[in-house]
Image (tube, rainbow over all chains, first blue to last red; front, top):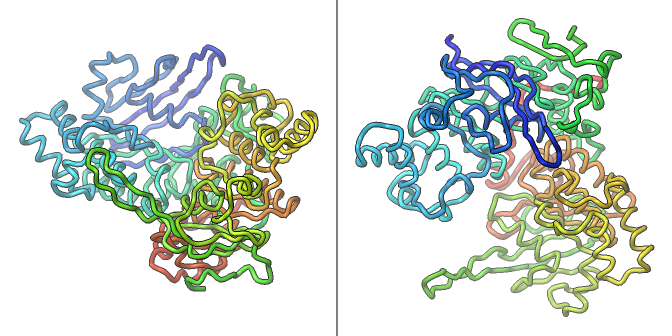
Length: 322
Length: 281
């Protein structure tokens, strides 16, 4: 299979006035092939949203890529001019945000917003843009004139997220990055949106990079999983294998939380990972998970483990050689 | 158990009894003069047992948050009663309400908007005590620091401001601010929804400890049935402004009766074939 996206040794730094340099990504390395669905799993502050904004070149002011490369079908995206990035965003890579209300223009009708994107990226006249918009709205389950002419505030949260998905897919991009697309929704709406994403992904043959803090959300949609901690991928591999036999102590701990939740033993002390993720402006010298790790070894506090590869799986931990 | 809102927490005195509570909001069209009422609560019956961990679940718009606001006396219901210590909160005057409010504390989902950004952590936790003219300045400060310690906030963060805390720490701060008023009932409205799984577990463990130390009762409002199944004694399900089903957490998941409950239970994402890793965690 041809590589669709190759991310190599990616480093991103935020330069903040008070906190100084914050290393949000510290050597992220992965690839995905066309048609694949890859999940990014991690707690808040691990760099997963930074990864999602770096790929389409949407880092905020004050943040910069200090090293590494992002290639989309052999084309290097790091260092591209804003004009070139603009033609790629929307047409080839799309980002779906967590909060659909903020991703939509409140004073434009839904149909007009989506048709604008079609006209910017696709050939054809206004009539064809409108036809494509109507067709896309139908596919996400918002058929008819009523939704086409609606304003964002007239829709529920789930419907707004459907609009954002329609917006992302209408130009048939190769890659869609979805950053916690369902966290602001209630659980029944969440499962509807996830199954919609799954259907559209297969029908339209889009690759999906899905970001979530909830292992269960990724399990419904993804073939592969990347587990991030403090700006690094600490474990990656086929999702079913990683979930069944997690190797990194952090992955093991995260999945144990989910397993205990599913067994529902009721009203006893819950397993929790002690402590909190490290401050990214003052990282420890050794493995960044070491202070919270139940299986730490002597080497862990001294230096960072290297990535160990075994078949399709990779893990960064001294337990496996590191 | 069916829709009668009867008690399942057996042998427990009721702390709070809600009877036929109704509340509508008037929706005014911004330009036209048309007004039409939106019914948020449509005759809610609910008994909260003393010391129980009762979860209230339902889809968005089912009336959960309106009920929470009515119980915390932040909102006046249109009809019905809320019995608490022999008094109907719906009929209380403003002075009596002010004495009752500390006993029923509401914790919101987004602590960032619930905490005054210009107050330091210590000021925030002390503020309710100042308003209630509790003790001396020194005693207030002492009590506030104790509450902070109970939720796992060390004294050295007393002078920090809300924006300098992480999401989980801000929620702890909100809990400390409620705790300092010695509440009997904590109403948590999606209080852990925005947090990571591990933080949810950490804070839930603190809530368990506080319950033992202070004989607290919890009404935990959420749409996350995964966590509810793990922590609640009982679950009440709301739909269309009423409580439509109530059962013990185990029973509710084993045989959900109402269609809305079945949909909620089905929507809990599950991962097949994972199990806790033996020993280490």
